[in-house]
Every structure is written in C-alpha cells, then in structure tokens.
Length: 501
Image 1 (cartoon, rainbow, N blue to C red):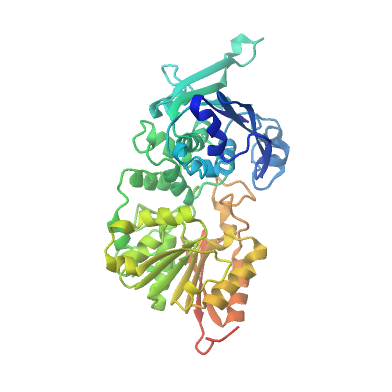
Image 2 (tube, rainbow, N blue to C red; image 1 turned 45 degrees about the vertical axis):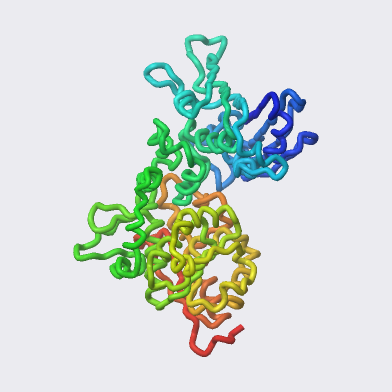
C-alpha cells in the first residue's frame, strides 16, 4: 500500500518538519500489520514529496489468530490486502504520522496551523460507483474541498468484457492543513473499503469524533461515514451521531448520578417493569434494558462502576487512565463526589477531557472539585494517595503483563485507597461477537484479555497481598455459558490493614 504527500512552492522546505520525518534517510516502523517505510522521492526547494509504503505480509496475517479470517482457506492467503489501501494503511498513517496529525511543530509552528497546497496520491483504493457513475472516493473527499481525480482501469486489458476494476488510482489536490488531511485519510480510507481489520469497540466512537472534528458533522455522507467507521454497530452509530449533532445530553450525565443508579445492581438493570434479559447480540456492545430500549455496554459499564462507588460510600475518587473523560463526566455530575481526579499518561487525552467537562466554563467551586493530572498507572503518584476510591475502568488490559506488578504496587501499596474498582473484558464472551474473528482481541492495543478464572486469580491474589477483600460482579447480560461481556472486581480494604504491605 502506498500513499504520497506532495507540496510545491514556499511550503516545500517545511513538509519534512511538519511530518517529523527527516528527508535525508529512509525510516522503517514495525506495526501490528507489517512494516511501514517513510522516504522522500523528491526534496528540493521547489517540490517535496513524502511517501509512506506499508509492506503487508499476507501470509503472516492469515496465520495470525489476531487478524486471521474465517473465509475460505485459499482466499486468506491469495487476496489484494497488500496492495489496496484499507484500514491497515489508515492505521499506519495514524501511527507513523501521529505528531503531524496533532497539528504541531516546534520548528515550524506557524506552518503547522496554516493551509498548504497539498497533493495526495494513492495507488489503489476501492471506489464503488453510484447510479450516476460517480465514485465513492469523489463523494467522500470532494465535499471537503478536494479536487478529486479517480483513474479507473480495466480489470484485465486482455478481457475488456470483464469491465473495470473495483479499485481506482486516487489523486487529491487542495489547500488544506496537513493535520486535517491526515485525519481525513484515516477516517475515510476504511469507509471506502467498508471494513476494518480490527475489532471495533466503544472507544472507536471517541477516535472517530476526534479525527472528524470540524468536518464530519456537516458532511453530506455523515451517516454513511459513521456507520461504516463503526462497523454497522447500531448503538455506536447512534452515540456518535448524537454527539456530532450536539445531542450528547448533559442531563444524561446527571441522570446517571446516585439517584439514577439506585436501580442498577451488579450490571443488570431493573425498574418498575420487568427488565428483558437477552443473550449477547452479534455485536454485543449493547444490552436490552426495560423492554426494547438498548443501552450500550460502555454505559452499563459506567453505571456498574458508579454503583460500586455508591455501595462503598466513596466521596474522593481518582479515575486512573481516564482517557477523554467518559467516566469523569458522570463523577463530576454527581455532587456526592467531593473530589474527582482524572489521570492519564497522554496530555492530549487530558486536554480532550477538559473540553468534554467544560471546565473552562465551570464555576470556581466546580473547578476546585476536579483535577486532571498527567500520570502513569505503573508509577507511584502521591497526588492520588489516600483517596476513598481509585477506578481502573478498562485499563489493565492495555498494560504489558510484565508491568502488572508495577501497577499493583502503585495502586494497592502506594496510593492505597479504601476501595479499588477494576473492570476488564471477559475473553470467554468474545465468541458471542460474530464480527470478532476467533482468537482476536477486542481492540488492537489490548496486551491480553482474561478469562473469568484468570481475572479472579489475579484479583484475589492482589487483594490477599495487600489486605483487601475482593468481590466480583458481572457487567452486561450474564450469559449462562460464557459469562458477561465485562467483568468487575470490587476491592475493599480490610479494617486494620492500613499498614499492610
């Protein structure tokens, strides 16, 4: 897979600075899908072209439990994946040009925030035609201000009766910020292919909104983009659409406070009417609640955490690994919590959390309750020591297994709160996700996923070592064969164990 980025004129000498890649040497990057190479076919004062070549090993992908498909055996090895630009190239762009996507450059700060004349070329992308013969690539990129050129070739020059190939050579020309162009590519390449090579979970909503900021909400094909980007998972599409349109209700955050969660017990919702319990759906990020209304799993997970905190009477809480603030907004909305701390290793996530919480508009009293801190879960941090509770919501599975003892020490020995709440995926439940290939994790960044027995063994041992009792709760519908989609451990510090090792 190949993509080139070119600019001419006064911006040419600055392109390498914006991409944070030196033009004088070729660089290679090992990715989960192969090896990405960055080099400069042209680098002069008049024109600069940077190329990203993704070298995909189709055989290794086919043999991998993580990326293997359930299709016919031969088609897993003989296909066009190494050549046609898909979500694998989008992943490579996002990882290799991560700094460029942020729109920052220490050496060229003014250029990084200004539009430049840019030309993007991709050798082969899917582009289905509509009833008027217009390719999907044109319909996606033209509304964003690009001049789009699609070059469609015959499937076989010797067999004209076979018609044209389904893929096109794509060239985009426009005056645009480089960071915007990269974000648009990472969103729209998987849309063209209508497929992603990894499991799409609820965290994909936040990623889509971040990369679509400033253009996705007004795009005429917004519904198509969100649907394909989120793998046709209805609940995720609805959530993304409501947030894009500004319908992500603040009242919902308030409704999920102590009053609202009093009807939620260990992840299973009840009300004055009988709750309908269902087994896992094909894309079980949702659970059926009170009849036909669907509640996404990520909301049920937040409700389960809030229930656990209410059960322990916590008032001072740290959400460690808070990301962009999905749980923080519920904690802030509930006045029961007098101190709310969010920590994350990534400053960009903390900036997004601050925007999501509208802290710039908050009162002095509200701001005094909330602190956002850059910190790592594997390093001790006195700023979160001695609290009523620490929450690790979908965090441990992102930590390398050999670093789990460091996590244990920082949370249970150094910070030593009265309560710890940990949620993590239940690996046994993955078989209920029909779109998730056998042996694959739910997210590419997961280092592992525990079965129920594995999670219980780890949590019980941690509790015993540090003087905590351990209670386990299901989150989501508790399937009688494979358990719930998410598992929760509630640690309570034993009386008299304040000085336990």
